[in-house]
Image (cartoon, rainbow, N blue to C red):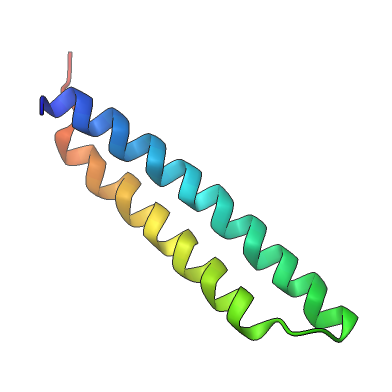
Length: 66
């Protein structure tokens, strides 16, 4: 796979995971204040968020300048 293609795919997936993680974590916060089950949902949200950030940051080494 070409570096530019890998950078693009990895960065897009990372951004999607970051957004999904934030959404799940915020929903877990709403559940917490509503008195519902929130722990595992919040944990999943943090895992998704951190995985997304890791992919975006790691993808920068495949970016081709110019």
